[in-house]
Image (cartoon, rainbow over all chains, first blue to last red; front, side, top):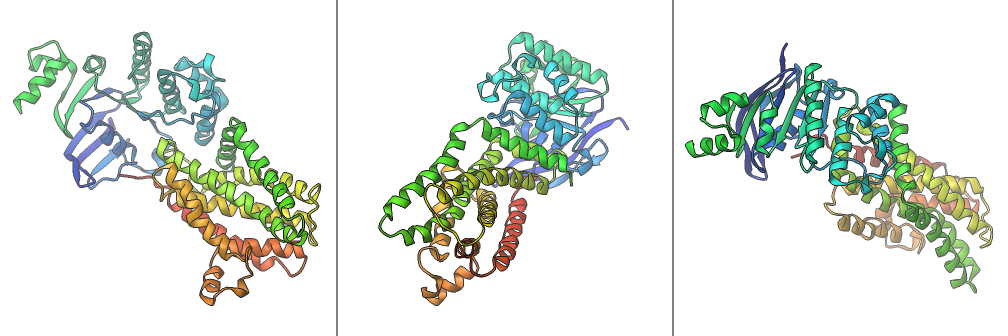
Length: 235
Length: 242
């Protein structure tokens, strides 16, 4: 089974407003898939649905062969939220130790993920005293604990310095090479080129999907930003 | 059910408290200060101090734990850490029991310090056992905690959560028999107070102080209230939200 995620006819209404009218998409295993679109396009809602924390109206979501939100998926998905859901009144180490305990992971894995996100030297620091980028990396480290098969990363590289951003993308590619599936959202179009395939999203609808190369070729341009604009204007 | 996850949660909450020494100081010193003030306010009516101070030993942990848990749980709900936790392999019950364990330990420390001050230098006399008084205080703290977790789901902001103290706990306090004996209340109020957990918390404390009567019935009812509220609290932790 090479399918990571399959969404069919997903519909989500929040407070009387239709967020996702009717969405279907598939994500292959072992790939880095980008979810690109402006803020408010439904990226986070789709990711929450895959993780199984979003109440949905209709539709089916299958994740790693199981229904989204299944108990058996809880150790197999790593989720990074935009708001960096960590305990700010704990140190980096205490945060990771707690999440590791819940996942049944060892102390070694705690230091392993600290190393991966380059926070080893900050491990004794309270999360409240970290910079925005460091907090995001700590939250990313909690998502990497237990080496999950599927990583759902909601704008993981926002506000990071370019060197670190490159390092993280290298890490994402390394994980994909190991067979992990990554769904990464971004509103920065220039991150698109680093993905294996893309979904361009606007107002809860998929404008287009494909490899970055094909999407640009179809629009006769070298810029993802231009691809997006031409797709919107064609509507 | 996993002891590791319950313990882990309790340890996490205690670490959060440890990083907040001011809260710890307030938790322990404020009740001692209030007891001392009470002692001198009733300098000429020592029997009133004897009556009120004992009951307050049970009430303080309840108030403090109510406030800490309602604000703390609300923070977990709004900061996204609760949602983050509930997609991991931890059950709602394990999470709630982790809370209970951590705040039970905090309540134990508070109860031991405050009752030592009251029974020692302040000269509070109780006819029953001192250990029982501390046990009652821990019961009360867990009761305050379970009410706190439960009502936090009805609050959207920390301002609202704090306002539940006068709205939920103070009416129970007025009806509990602490200020006026329940027998002297209008029958409708007395009937209402029969269904409020604080009534039995105060009753248990008064029995321990007077050394008269058994606390078994109070403990049984408090345990039922406690589990019902913890269950209701667990139900308010939602894995799926809009």
